[in-house]
Length: 147
Image (cartoon, rainbow, N blue to C red; front, side, top):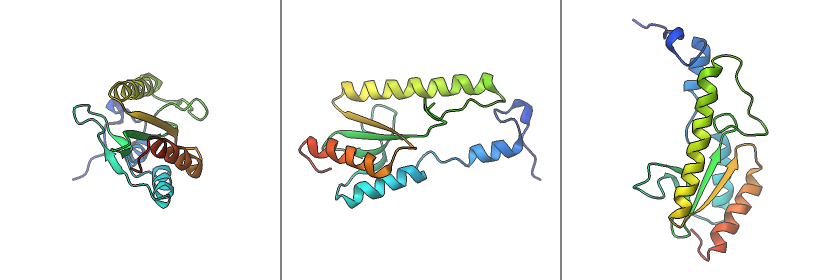
């Protein structure tokens, strides 16, 4: 027997919103796939959804291990894009701190990887995939390696 989730105790204001939010992907998003396709077409090879530093519990979207380049394609809503993020009208007491924690974690991840010798590239999901791919290529080739 299926039972609807208790909306009162949930972060979602309605069952429909809960279903939509649970359907959001954490990897293999459309913007990420477009960037990966463009980078691959340039002849660069990479690891997908990979921990650049195994001891650090953070996963990058694309990782070029030899060049030590970690790429993150951040969603505008989940990471608080200054250009596109719109605060929700409901459950603000949940979402405002949630997005703030995501942004703080992004900064901590960038700092930790940089301290360990990685070049960290962060892009917003709304950026042009071809332009993003060129910047990634420059970072990887600029390190004298091809992936």
